Image (tube, rainbow over all chains, first blue to last red; front, side, top):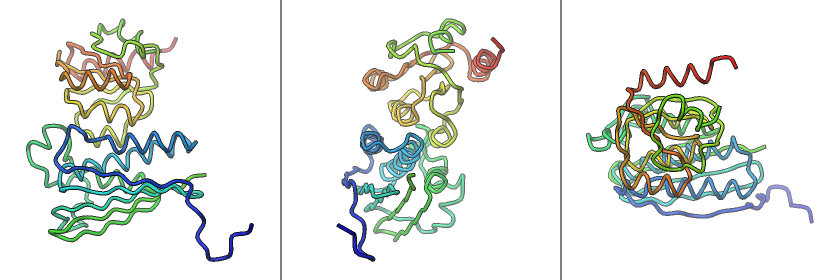
Length: 149
Length: 113
């Protein structure tokens, strides 16, 4: 059966995950799950590693700064999409937050080696397409797209 | 050169993940900022750090590192070893500081033959 023009192609896989803010002990669980799912789907290793970096950095941001978040993973033809919607303090100045080295992390976060002001840069650099929206006092919404062959 | 050969050559104490010591080492990266390591290290690298908490295991696992080496005789946290054992990632300890250890391993990996 032909797919009619204009109708979106079906997704191969989609799943949602939850992240709890403030819990550094479980940081990395969602990105590890995403990596393992993509591997099982036969996504090439370099794409899987990009998705792992992108989702890990987003996960650490949620743990560091937000109350909680939903992560939506969608794998479609030629594309892996990762969306992270958090409820938290939001980002007052996105341009500033995107600057490498800029960070509002407290001492506790920095002592663990997080909060170096590189997370959003890594997300941008390892995504083929990256969108960020944020509202102070409400939360931040990240959309990352990685193309697959 | 595999992890085991480096363990023997620079005198590392293996804390866990012995079953993965046969893994080939493709390079190394030294750093304590997790995002820096996330962004710049590669698959098969040995990661040299003084961070001892459990979050280093997620980074090493996601980046598919050959192992983690703690410097200055730093002891890994109990949860770090637990997670690393489950992920089959070798965690090793060196008494050397980062500069000296990195230099020795760099020489091993780049010397001909």
